[in-house]
Length: 152
Image 1 (cartoon, helix red, strand yellow):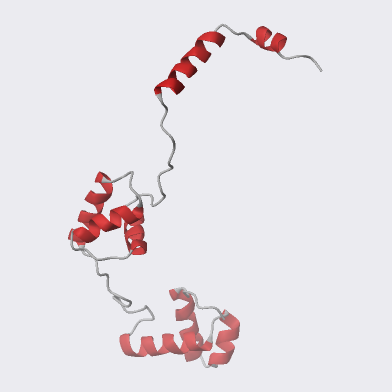
Image 2 (cartoon, one colour; image 1 turned 30 degrees about the horizontal axis):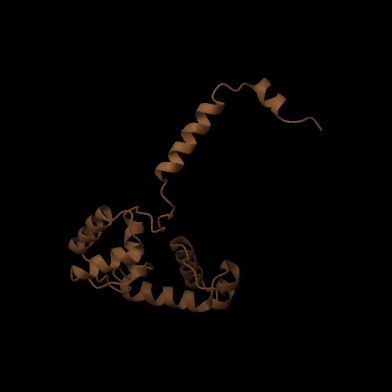
């Protein structure tokens, strides 16, 4: 069975069925969870008195509130820069994290990690051509447009 989070109510129900005399195998089939999951829940219930996972389990973060604040400030100042450029700015401030971790931290702060779309800037000639076009066709109406196109 795939690894997944089993609800606390289901684990409590499994422990209740075991106490009522059912085998772990029958409970496993009835509830659709693995026997090892039931065994782990029984062991947690016996040692801690609860089927909940221990608080603080898992890897600790290397980032703290100060470094998160620093990342936020750099991201605000460089909002048009790529994530790699922001990461190099962060590393200059003695916070050594990977680009992927930086992207996750920015996502937690509701920043987008998408690159800015690069586009060519309009030259003076482009702008003049656009104004000339608009002036030429500003008095067009629907009738004039329909007369312009040849009927098929």
